[in-house]
Length: 184
Image 1 (cartoon, one colour):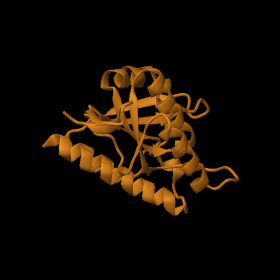
Image 2 (cartoon, rainbow, N blue to C red):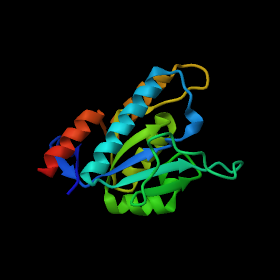
Image 3 (cartoon, rainbow, N blue to C red):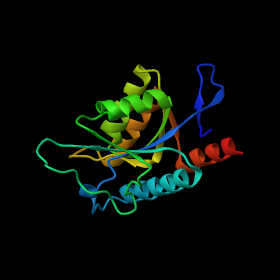
């Protein structure tokens, strides 16, 4: 069984089956001079590499904009394999894809990484909670954009704070360690 660590209401740790969700790992967000963007990409690659080696299900989710006739290409190193899931959504939450919602309802627990934590991660975590699911947010494998002020780092901290009230926060290394323990 693949698992992530989550806290129950009694603040005891327990394990749940997990799917690694990679949101919006697409080329339009390159090149980016923000060092936090590059760190998030590296940690997304680390989580993806581990999930593939460990047999953890992977779901790629990307936003389809109505004014674009095709989806933007994946970042280098993030091309989904034939055995991995790909979902397209029309709104912030990954649950805007009916197929994603069905998959997530069955999985129960998600490990979230990718871009736009201020919108996609927050909305997805809220929808998961509403539907009885759980999200572990890989804070160092996620990145927030900004359109003016505050800075991307401030927005990311705020998104992480919001998510911590309804989901779990974890680093990529801690998530990998928890998954390795479960596989023993």
